Length: 96
Image 1 (cartoon, rainbow, N blue to C red):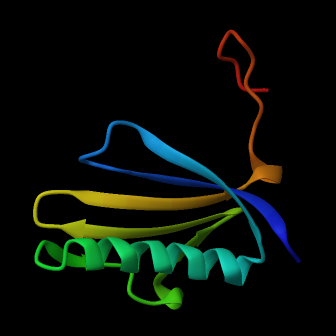
Image 2 (image 1 turned 60 degrees about the vertical axis):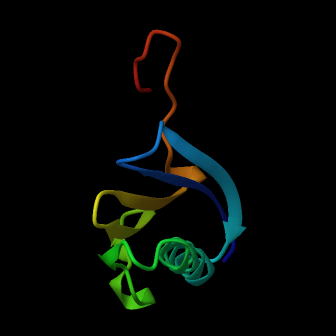
């Protein structure tokens, strides 16, 4: 079943996180995360040291998936979280 996800991309050399909307199945979102890792690896082939290499290596948590790419002097994290599982927060910072 297709669901809405927020995709967060951030890392040690980034100022904050980039956030994206994505709609797909769990298998599709896992493939997306793997493709994002592959793209980062291709963009810095010489600096890449290790990271998520296969769909089976993607970490699954309740309502969330995680992949990563590590380089000599930085790393990048890729997280997909189901919108339906996200919590609300009020203007005072209290999680509802």
